Length: 157
Image (cartoon, rainbow, N blue to C red; front, side):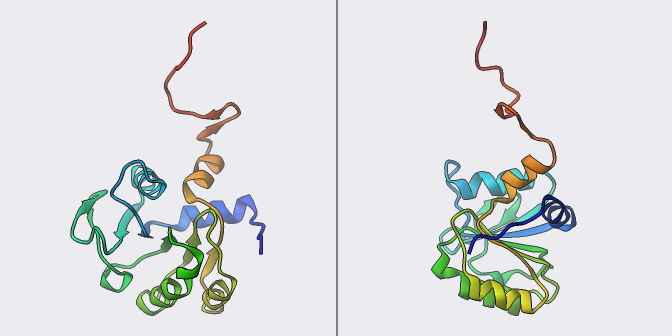
């Protein structure tokens, strides 16, 4: 199911979010999960990396954990970088671990309507098939008409 989210809704979600647990983050800097998490950190979000393959490693100023259940700090948003079939288990763990969870965000290509409905029934905002990095850039003026604003001039007249 393709969902439509208003710009104001997405903006409000991003503004209220301070701490993001990124499930499925990679330590490989060429992977999308790495550069999305790094970008969020650079924008002032606290990023908690969640991936059993890199548990114990320092990434984005935090120690990676294997599971959401290992996180003891409050988390505002769980950002899911896993296949859609993995979503129900992640949503269940997130709901069991974080009593004040505000948002479950599923990356581009990731959707699971039953898990989303379960989270919504608990009062959690769910965003599916979107990227918080892209939405942040788009909504807060970091994407320009010509594409990405890298700050680097790549061609000369």
